[in-house]
Length: 476
Ligand code: ADP
Image 1 (cartoon, rainbow, N blue to C red):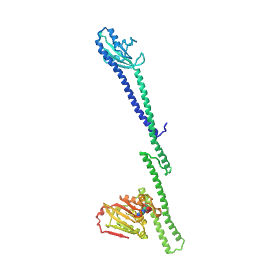
Image 2: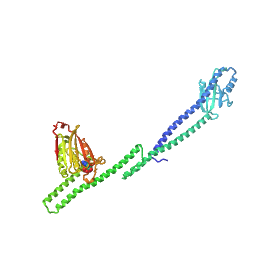
Image 3: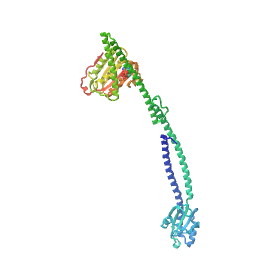
Image 4: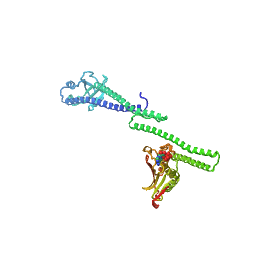
């Protein structure tokens, strides 16, 4: 017995469908065969009756000799020929047996009504199944009405039909065995991979994400297997990224906290040198700002992830925004002797957006450019109007990003090198903000040669009225 499950379903389904089809064919075939045999017997007798009907009116001899002539001349092998009167009484018959019987079957009634009568049934005297064919003989000598009746046993034909039925049932059984074997094979070819996939996914459900579905499965099962493998791989990767994030965020939190703790202890220990106190307080304030920035970045990210971030939309001049950013990062750039250069042809580049969020985006991009640039290099910022959009690009000649990492820099928590500080959330957050402004962010980079990040935002329509000015250049 096959265990409950898909395998049994498939086998039973096939078996049932084929069984029904074979049964139908068998029944139709046996009916057709039976009527073919019975019809041939009937036709054979009918043609003999026709000969009798043609001959009888021509016969002019006395009555008695007609009866014996008919019985001798027109009898058929294995068939009883009877002559009946109008009441169905047997006048004579070819086997000279039970000659005084009276016959009342439907064929005789039909014959007396003028048709060729046919009856199939059990003969009371022998208990055998027989076919009787009768016809009335008119216009013969002495105006006597006769009914001529042929009766033949169907036992031989029925035996033959029975043998054929047994034989075809044998074939049907053989076909069903083949169907069983083939459908079990087919069911196994489906169920085995499913069982394997189920086992591996059960392992995955228990946290074993290193388990993989082996085997070269085809079609939907192949797709299912590779999707599950991909899912496990992604979970491993995301877990790794989260672990990295926790370690880098702990490091990020620890550095300012150590500094704050160190200075607060120093200040607490007394001495109160006003100059030293001022430096200490400045550092504490700076490091606290850093911590607040870090926490804000994480909060922003979680809000964006939950779709709970509300944008405060207004008109934003991107040129003004970039100039403001250049002032913000001036000190940091100065420390590495990096120059920031802004190229723009117009005095204002207006977009509809959230000024604070857009500032956050470009601050992150410019901050990264400074962080990953070599000392004494230049970072180019440019503003351009292209096809109803404003394109802002930030180009550096820093360390660049390899093609492999480039595909992942926008992923949450991704960092090429965790020693560089940061959370790996900056570009992920920027990407989401830009998308919420219906814009696009393109990152091009070559390892060792530098990076260019281009952000494209839809320009504000009313801004077209603003007069274009001469080429202006901002430099810090
Ligand atoms: P982070 O807070 O670490 O800066 P980001 O999402 O802003 O996070 O950046 C992700 C990673 O992309 C950075 O850690 C860095 O490795 C890489 N990256 C971003 N900008 C640049 C750049 N201008 N040059 C080289 N690498 C960059």
